Amino acid sequence: MTREQLEKELGKKVKIQITDGDIIEGYLRKTGENDFKNNPSLYIPKNYYFLTDGSLNCISFLFRVSHIVKIL
Image 1 (cartoon, one colour):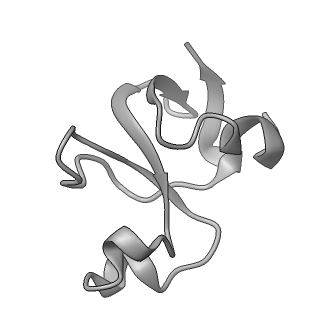
Image 2 (image 1 turned 90 degrees about the horizontal axis):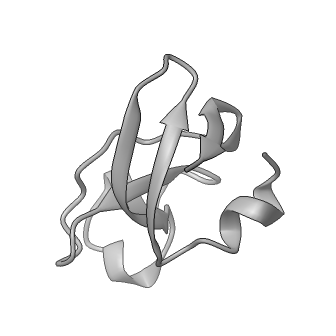
Image 3 (image 1 turned 180 degrees about the horizontal axis):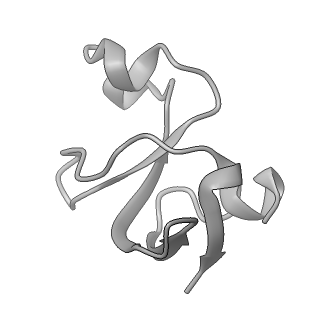
């Protein structure tokens, strides 16, 4: 998985398999987006991704491209 491939999915609902075998589902977001500027944990780190529910609530941990096995 490359960063370019992953970033094509930003804002879309995705299912992601991560390196430990878990599958997580939600809307793919990237740290540093203006929607999260009031939450330093989601705004300050660079080049991390996370999943949200439909109303911008973070429902996953922060992860990098290298943590992703594939998008299902």
